[in-house]
Length: 89
Image 1 (cartoon, rainbow, N blue to C red):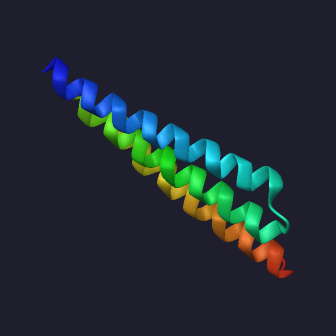
Image 2: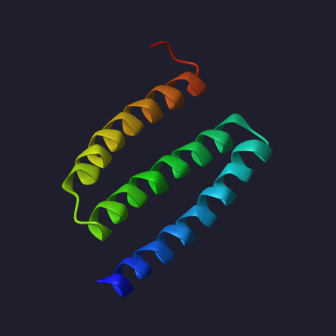
């Protein structure tokens, strides 16, 4: 059981490195769409991290929260894309 939890933590650490790289893209992004894609990437990695965390510790609530967060992330991405395209809400 402990070795399996350690493997999950290694995967979460790798995902943390991916988030750091995406944050760099959000900060350095030359255009607004690049920043929006970086933010969407961070949201996706956070969702995956919540699912892995829930699987590692056998807690279903984290997976439920990840589903709700994914829905809200998708809707916010749509609004950001619509705004960047110049449309009205």
